[in-house]
Length: 548
Image (cartoon, rainbow, N blue to C red):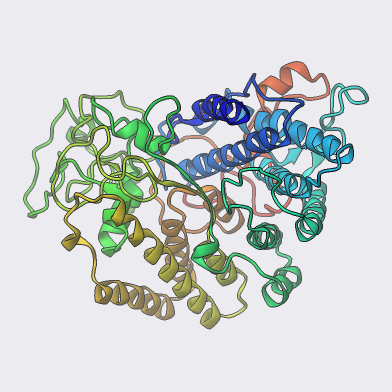
C-alpha cells in the first residue's frame, strides 16, 4: 500500500512540473496535495522534487536573460511579471520549509533516526534560500513558516539570508555525517550516498563564496574539503521516457517532440556563437529539422530564399542596433532555425522546420545531418537531465576566483574538457543516430587548444569575453549561474542586443511573488526590476551591463 501511495504522489508532483522550460511562466504550481503529516519518506519526495523545481526555474530565467535560452518579450519589465517568482517562493515555503518542519517533528518523536531526511531537506532549504536572494534580492527566513507568531512575515536582507543558508548547510553536514541511513527513503540523486551529499554541501558553499567574493573561504574549501570535482559526482535530476501518467520526460523534450512538431525556439545568439567556433557540442545541444533557414546560407553555402509565412523577419532589414554590432538578427546559417533575444513575433507553421532540443540535456535527437522531423519517442525519448551543480561549472568558478591568467586558463581548459566529455556521452541515448558525425578526439582536442590559445593571446575585454562565452556554453540547460555571472562582471559584452532598441533597464532582480504581495500586508511590490542583490555592486541599470 505504501508503494501505491508513493507512486500516486509522484504522479501528482511530477505532472505539476513538466511544462515548458522556455516560457516565462513555468507554471510550477504549488501542489495542493503536499502532505503536512505522515510518512517522512513521502515528505522527503516532495522536498526533493521541489528542490529540482527551484533550480529549474532559476536555470530557465537566467538562461533567458543571458541568451542561452530564448526570451520572447521585447520589454523586460512587461516580460517578467505575473507568476515569475511565485513558483520558487511556493516550492520553498509551502513545500520545502513545511515538509522539513514536519520531518523534524517526526524525527524528534520517533525511535527511528531520520537524520538523512532532515539533512537532505536542509540542503534543499539552504540552496533554495540562496536562489531566492539571487532572484529577488531578499527572502523570508527569520519569520518564515510561523503563521501563529508571524502571519505576515517580513523579508530579511540578502546578506543575512546567505549567512543563514551557510549555517543551515553546516547543520546538514553534521547530520549527514551522523546519519544511520535512508530508512527506506528514495534518494532521487545519489541513492543514499552521504559522501556525495557532503560534496553537494561544500559545492553550494563554493557558489556562495564565489558570488560574494570571499576568496579565503572559497580557497579553504578547495584545499581542505571534498566538493563536486568529478563528473561522476554531478548533482542532476534524471528524467525518464514515460509519456503519460506520469510524464517523466525532460520538459523541453515533451514540448518539442510532439506529433505537431517542435514548440520551442532555440537562441540564435548561442547557436551562431557555437557554429562560428565549430563547437563540438553543437550537434548534441540542437537538432536541425531543416538544412537551411530562410534568409541565410544552407549547409552547402547556398542562399535560402526568405519566406514571410515561415520566418517573417527573413524579409526585414535588420534594425540599426543590430547592423552596427554585426549581429545575426533573424537567420543563422546551416539550418539553425531559432529566434533572437526578445523576438515576440507570432507563431508561424514552422513546427517541422525550427531547430529542436537535442540529445543534451533534453534526451532528444543527436544531429547527424539527417534533417528529419521530431516526434514522440524519437532520439533518447526524453531521458535527459536537469543540471543542478556540475563539476565543469566548479572548474569555471575556480577560474573566476583565480588571481592570474595562467591559472584562469588552466581551470577554463579543465571545465571545457569536463563539459564536452559529459555532453558526448549523451549520444548513446539516440540509438538510431549516425555516430560518424560525432567529433573525433583530435577535433575536440584541437578545439580546446584553440580556445585556450586565443584566451592566452587576448587582452582586456577580449580575454574576458572568451572566458565568459565558454562558461555559458558549458552552462547550457542550467543557465541560472550565467545570470549571476553577468550581473557580477558584465561579461560577455558580445551578446546580441534585444530585438527592441529600448527594452528598458536590464533586470537586476525580479518582482516579489504576486501571491505573497496580495496576502502579506507587510510586503509592497517593487515598481521596477532595477533593485540590486547585495553582491551586485556594479553601476545601476541601464548603464550596466554594457551589452544591454
